[in-house]
Structures are given as structure tokens and as C-alpha cells.
Image (cartoon, rainbow, N blue to C red; front, top):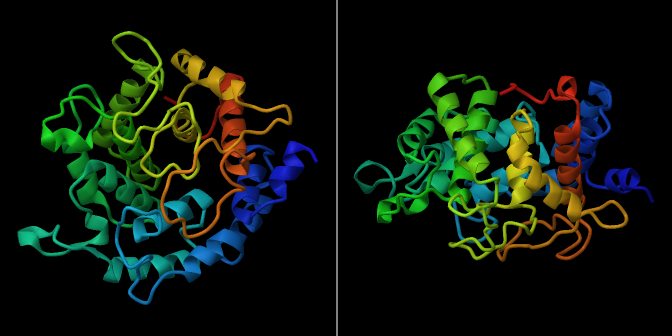
Length: 322
């Protein structure tokens, strides 16, 4: 079986992205396949798990991966069409009923899309909210005010940290991108996003600014940024960083070349990329074939970032050129 056949022998959420991002299939064919995410496979299963209170896992957020925030992140990654009836219904229940307890004014409850206290969580909420067309303007304003002088963000700022975190910065950058991409162009948002991108570029996505040495382990989670996961949740890795730069349509900066070489080096003899790590937690659905096994999601993401980086300039059109 060829790599393309293997990728297409998958869930609709994989197939429609392969058709669009790898095969450059006609728009009508892509849209037909994408529409199936709401009614078949992983997307339909996740939608069916929503409780009558609008939540998943009975919580706005939890330390597993089955909460409202995490399932919405998965549905975004699967490419559930925000304009679909199924998405509109699910998001109306979240908007109307799900809250963060004790995070509102005076210790009351905050509506889900008002978020809570940490920029990493608020970045993830704002990203899914913006993707699904919800009003997250107050969260975006808060995140803009929390950007650090070095260009990034860190959940540990309240504990005195003055250095940014790759993990938190990536979560916030994705939020700013989705906010801009879904009809909210704003010069302040764009400026903050470009400063955050520069924070990552200065560090070549996985190197220390001071010495240029590869960062072996994340200080907070202990994960290796050279190991590729999906879903990534709040965790950063090199493939997630490259996927972000592909998604925003950034110019393929030469400072990304080392990260690109890392991705190339991890391709196996069959042209596939494996699932290096699965972070512990309660996954609501099985996404791939398991840790250490070839991963359709990582293969899809690797193929599209490599094609983006290697394409001639006139072919680089995934969004705004920067």
C-alpha cells in the first residue's frame, strides 16, 4: 500500500485534509469529504458524547483529555466545519451552559469563552472559540496584555517568571492566528503574533538562544521536543511548531531549516512518521494506532510542512504571506 493509499484508508477527518493539503484535490471533493466529519467516524463519536449540560467529561477543563476544552480542540483538529448544523448546535450548548467555576468577578463562574487564569489554557480556549466563531475578544485582549518582553508567553509569570515558555507561546499563537483568520483582523493582534513567531524563530524552534544547543527536555512537562505527538494538547514539539508556520502561511524562513531536517530524518523506509509519544490522560476516542506505530496524523502533518517549505515561492499560498 502506498503512503497516499494508507492515508486515504482512514477516518474522514484525515482523508479530507490529505485531499486538500497533500493531493490538491478539487474543492468540491474536499468539501464533500469534510462534511462527513460531523456524521461519521471520530467527529460524530465525539459530538455524540456531549452531555445535556453542554459539557464533555462534566467539566470545562480537567487534567485528562476528555473535558469540554479538550474535545473542542480535537474537533478543531479533525476539521469539523464550524458552519455545520452539528457544530452550531454543540457550540450553542457550550456557550449557554458551560462555565469555569470560581473564575468570574468576585469569585463567581465565568462563561466558558471568558476563560480562566492561565494564558496556556486561555490560549487553547481562545483558539477553539475563534475557530468555531465564538466571541473571544476579551480573552484575546487579556493575552495581548500578558505578552512578555522577549515576545512570548508563560503560565508561570504570576510566580515571577520573566522568560517565555515554548508551550504557552504556541498555545497563544494558535489563538491569535484563528482570531485573525476568522474575520477579526487587528493590527495589535498581528503585531503580537509576529513578535511571538520571532521568539520561536530566534530559537530555531528547539534550540537555546544563549548557546544554540538543542533543548533536550521541556522544563515543565519533561517531554522531548524532538518527539512528535498527536494530539499535542498544551505540549510543544518541533512538528507542532512547523505545522503552525505552515498554517499561517509564513515565509519559509531559513531559521527553520534545522527543524525541517529533523522532520525529514524521522521518516521511515515506507515514507511514514510514527507516533513517538502519547501523553497520559483519558482520551475520549482512539486517534491513531498507538505509540511507536506509524501515525497517519503525524505523516499528514509532516508531508504538508515539508511540501510547504520546499515549494517555490509562487506555490506558497496557505494564508497571508509574511
